Length: 135
Image (cartoon, rainbow, N blue to C red; front, side, top):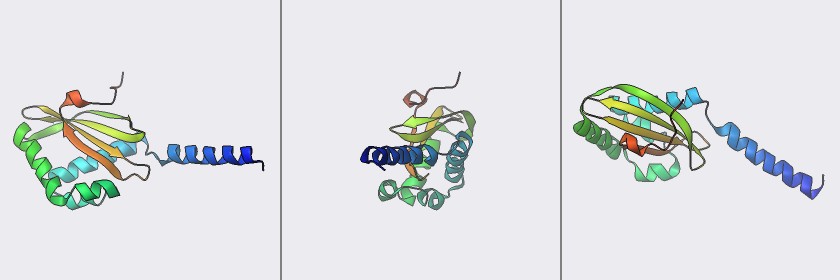
């Protein structure tokens, strides 16, 4: 095999592994909803064990518990999910769940790395959405 052919094979292998590393739309939504359910149920340990190496240094079980307590203190009781979006954020797969609470709607963004681990997790106002809605 020539050097050029070998280089092309390596590039294609890398590209293919990135493409296939992503979860299906349904699986990504199910994972993000499972994270939400773990927040609701107080299962911080289950969330923390899904974090990538960088996130696990930043986000402890206590911080996870405090995040959900802060959201519900601000927005009231959780009512349901009003919209689900899946897309790319900085070359990673992201799911945005629009969460309806008694007082307001909050966006939960869960970002997954190529291994399916949580590489980002935030709650913010819906205006902070980075993913386009479906038409």
